[in-house]
Every structure is written in C-alpha cells, then in structure tokens.
Image 1 (tube, rainbow, N blue to C red):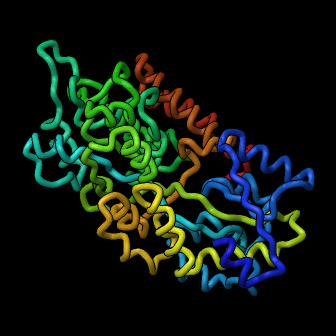
Image 2: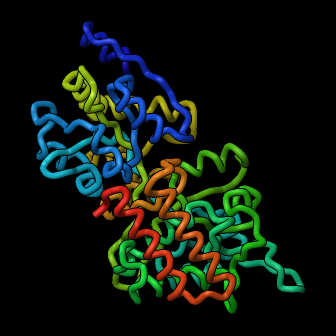
Length: 376
C-alpha cells in the first residue's frame, strides 16, 4: 500500500517502523517533545486526552468533518474530536464480543448462543461440569474475578454503560449494582468461576471454559494455540428492553504536531482510509492470519456481517461506546491506572469488603486519575 502511494506521489518517501507495545505511549510522547518523533503514529482510541498536546488536527482541506462523520462509526466521532476538530483516522474497529466453544455448546444441546443475560445464565449453568466434590472441571463462562480474567475491566466498563452507570460516579447505586452482578458469577450460589481457575484465555484454549468475553483480536491468539478449537462469536448479551451495546477498543492513526510534513502525512492517511485501500489491506492481512482488522468504514460493514469471527464486531459497531479502562493498551496512563483501582475493588470484595465500600474507594482513586489526565 505504501508502494502504491509512493508511485502516485514520487516526491513522498514513507518509512514504516514497528514498535513494541510496552512503554510505547510514553516513548512516543517523549520523542515528539524532543523533536525526533515520527510524522505519523498509531494510538489507542482512549488516549486522545493524554496525547492532545502532541497531536495535530485533521485539516478540512484533506477531509471535512462531514466526510469523517459519514465515513466512520459514531464511536469515532466521540473518541477523536476535541472542539470542532478531529485528531485521527481509524483503520479498524474492534470491541468486546462473546466468544464461545461451539463443540461444547453442541454437546450440551444448546443450539443457539445466548442473546440476553437470562439466556447467558441458563447456558452457563447447562455448560458447567463439576466433579463429585463440586470442583469446576468445565466452566460455563469466565466472569466474576480480576486476577485470572483478561479484559475484566473492559467487561466491567461495558456493564456500567449497559446499566446507565458512570465510571466517574462509581459510588452510585447503578455502579454498585454492576459490581454485585459481576461478582455473582464467582460467588455462591452461581459459582461459575473462581480465583483458583487458570487464566481465562488459557482455559478457553484448553476447552475448560465454554464462553469468554474479549475483543475479536484475541481469537487470532486462541486459534494459533489450538487450531482445532471450534470457535464462534456473537453479540454481547442484552439487558431486557435495552439496545445492543459494546465497549470499543481500536487503534487510530494520528499526525504529530511537531511534524514538518503535516499536510502530506494527513493526505497519506486519507489515502489509507479509502474503500479500495482498506479492502486491499484487509485482504493482505487475511492471507497471513485468520482475518484482517475489521473495517472502520461503515460502508464496508455489510461485507463482514456474515464472517464467523468478526461479524459480531460490525453488528455491534453501530452501538459501541468508549471508556478509559481498556486492557492491554500498555499506556502506563489512564487505562492502566483506572484498571488498577478496579482490580483492587474486585479483590477487596473477595476479602469481605462490601461492594459499596469497594467502589467508593475506587471512585476516589479514579477521580484523581481523571484530573491528572484531563479527562472530563
């Protein structure tokens, strides 16, 4: 794709450098502030408040706000806008989906995936296998703890949004209800999961848990570890009477405020988000792995709705929202700091602290994080 662009624009030379995710955000900010950073950089959809100082706005001559808003999902309109300007162009969309083991579903006589929370509880109960002493051999679903559930914070965030609660008001009754509902999966009488279980991704790979909630990119890791696993995905369970909803987690391309080539950088990014280019990128990615990055363009949505792995991502993309509590962004900033407070809250309840007290303590810490990173 870079070669295609350079052929059309022979005066432009593009060098692509891959970075490791650990410490990436901190290094990026430091290098741009020192004057030796890249022209274009990738950042997580939750990072904009903490990197606004190093980011340049999308020029209207390259892409108008109207074109941006008619091209990308609504969640990007919220995530990437400061004032009246957009500060990035997304090449993908991703977020939480329900990933399930279809073979375990068939063996349990379950013919369709759960659509509501009631369905989920019933399915998890049917799928659970215990020994004579009540120890879990196969879990129906991995929920309820923090230490052995990847993306537990994303899941909590989605549940907060679904219940009309706010991350900035964790001491509200709506938020405390979410903590209670999450913890019930690892408490009597449900006991679907517990802190002694293995990591939920590892357990899913080994067929020891039938359902997990995670972003679609996790499927690549799971299938690489166990190619024979029969995996399907579906949209997240609904609260009765509610619209579909998922928590977004995707990466965005931005342009450095310190770049001497801002206009050219934005022109290249505009080229990358064109239909033809994006389709080419997806096809190239799909040749080396199970599927490419789900399209960020709404007008390419229909081409993925039937995909067994990412169909549920684009099904929910119209209803995605964002919160700064996403796992594995390695930001050493908002996400990681908020996650630490949520983990402490969950672990505290396992030691007998009330849901109310646990989230009240977390609320104080998160308030400080939001002030530190200028999150309104």
